[in-house]
Length: 172
Image (tube, rainbow, N blue to C red):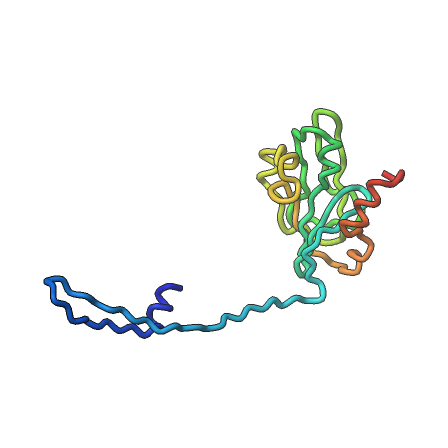
């Protein structure tokens, strides 16, 4: 940026008269201003917010790709996760169907898919270090990525406010 500004600025240096052995110089720089424009384009299905199931899985959607994990409530309820069995890449999954499992020092829990689709990725770091689920369930502890086959299924999921209300209810 500084290089661009330097190229755009007009500079002039003048030597000023002086009676001493030292020379005086004047530097004149004209001001340069410019405007940078940024825009964000979204599509109908682009949804950066996290959506939740009643079984405490979350999903973020980017186009037709969903990234799935478990909520903070779920990881806290499980305790220290020591084993993660994630769905195999290429496998087809159905919404609300069991697709993997997590084991902790306190309990074992099945993973359920929030949407139908094809598994296109899994978090191998979580398979090697399952405790990532406890330390970073929303960032480093995500579980798998799915190419969603029916985007209408996301309408059945809860946004964060609705999920927080659900957690306060007796239904949990």
